[in-house]
Length: 302
Ligand SMILES: O=c1ccn([C@@H]2O[C@H](COP(=O)(O)O)[C@@H](O)[C@H]2O)c(=O)[nH]1
Image (cartoon, rainbow, N blue to C red):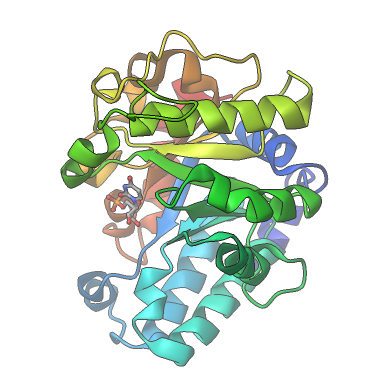
């Protein structure tokens, strides 16, 4: 059975509408778990695969096959394919193709950022319909200024795609930078992280007319205390639900049962992202592990 067959035997896939609407559909049907596709060298070995582009392709396609019909979202970590150069990109294109054919929402974890014209080219590569690398959403690095991403934000909106801007990431090394307080400009006095979140909420409010799920989200790590980043989880500044890509569950220590206490008023938009904790089950048990973790995250369904 192909991944697409697995999905077509269940309910119809929400394949139309804005990224926010499709994300909301995925939450309603499958819950919040997002399976990361991270072919670490050691994982390929554990899966009995070579540490090559072909190994990473097989790995990714097996993870997609196991995920289809169990979760609504996958997140390939592009870095693990990029390490094999053009062969790695070809492998990734095939993994992305399988995932999209299976009706999975694909968040390509690319973490791109640059000045406007250059970051727009990244948007064209990853978000243009028909592009070989087409995904449903990508991660962006806003540290050249959220304004530098304007052309890609517009491109994503036109193509019904999504974006996730890094705000408070799960790694401890980021805290000093992301907790720093802005000295000037419209966001003076806010932390870097809170300022990114504020600007994303403004973009979503302007785009959605103050209701529903936005299509531009933030990355908020599940391993960090958001209050330390100047983010008041009890007071989202808008009625629009902000999509939150939340890595840090599983291997990095956070527990999906804690979504409500970790994210408060933002919990409704949280995507529980897990890679190693799921993938280390190995090729024969990964589907069981996904099922177990979907059940665990069940209390947090949308
Ligand atoms: O703040 C961030 C942003 C991205 N990541 C990425 O998510 C996965 C996490 O993998 P686990 O195995 O579940 O720890 C990985 O691809 C990271 O690059 C993150 O961890 N934190």
